[in-house]
Length: 132
Image (cartoon, rainbow, N blue to C red; front, side):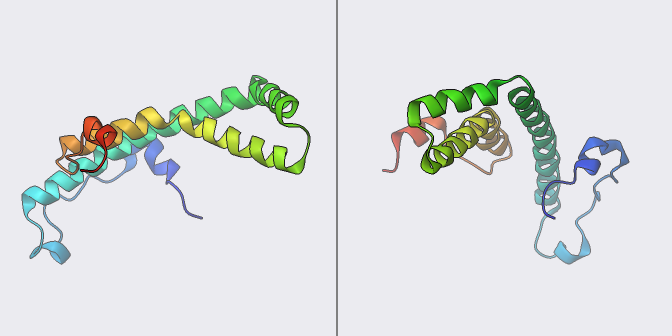
């Protein structure tokens, strides 16, 4: 069963603090500065993932319990018909739309969080401009 350790994320105070020193297994290959930066990055990314997980659960709850999903299915069925392919298309479209709600978090992680820690030097302008 892969996936996030939700119990550990829900109670960060219950998690042990990170080791202040470089673990012995990495002592010869990782500097204390690099180790500290990687620990800080991991904690920041975990906090962002907790917010994203909460947001995704809220969006999914609204979609499931507000009647949006059946309404979207009826609209999709009216436009595409009632075939197996139309049903598969609905599943793909619903998945893409639900995933779109997470894009601001992915954007923040890619262009702000990783840039803050020096892991990514690509800017949004570079992404739009393309290779070259």
